Image (cartoon, rainbow, N blue to C red; front, side, top):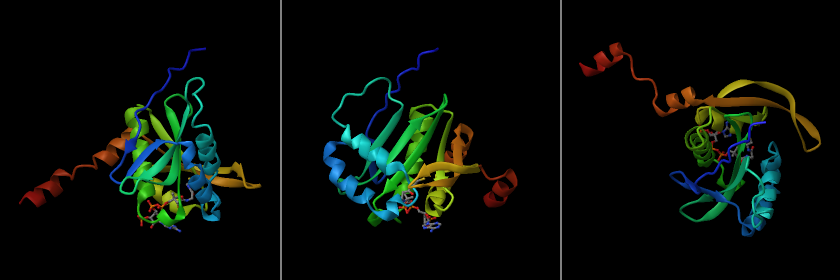
Length: 198
Ligand SMILES: CC(C)(COP(=O)(O)OP(=O)(O)OC[C@H]1O[C@@H](n2cnc3c(N)ncnc32)[C@H](O)[C@@H]1OP(=O)(O)O)[C@@H](O)C(=O)NCCC(=O)NCCS
């Protein structure tokens, strides 16, 4: 079988307001506190992956890394406000996920984060496709994915088993062509341009 090329990435990733870095063990108390909030746990199995990553933060990486569970920091305050992840899947593809402490919801941070994860996957990692799985009830997260340029691809019945039940989910994804459209929205048609130029 062909050996997988190890993937290395340059951290931190920065967005206008956020910084995304590796977890440290010192993040655990805060991470556990907001992961325990029922609003965070309602739809998302991501919190257990983030806690596991923070718990093994001091340990050396064994084998080629296939997933990055990362801490989300507000640059202005230096405070940990959430977690995100990117996991490599089929060749050229990755899944992304994110969560924020509820007191930081509604400021557009998740949209900024999802946009950065897409750019990271399709740009720095040169992947072909980035996708996300979202519980069908999670309208807030669907809105975030749509604003980051991902498009709805289909419904996955009973796709995730978490919290003692099976969840129906939507799959969203973006490929390189879709990303190019996000970065460079379609130029106005010559007719419209002609009207504007007059
Ligand atoms: C999903 C999550 C990260 C979103 O965080 P956020 O800070 O609210 O995200 P943003 O502010 O970037 O954007 C939220 C958008 O959803 C919209 N929204 C908020 N509540 C909504 C609702 N009930 N239905 C539909 N849209 C909603 C907001 O208006 C906003 O869109 P707008 O900018 O067009 O107004 C946060 O709710 C969270 O951590 N949830 C728990 C974990 C989780 O579900 N993770 C996702 C797993 S796929």
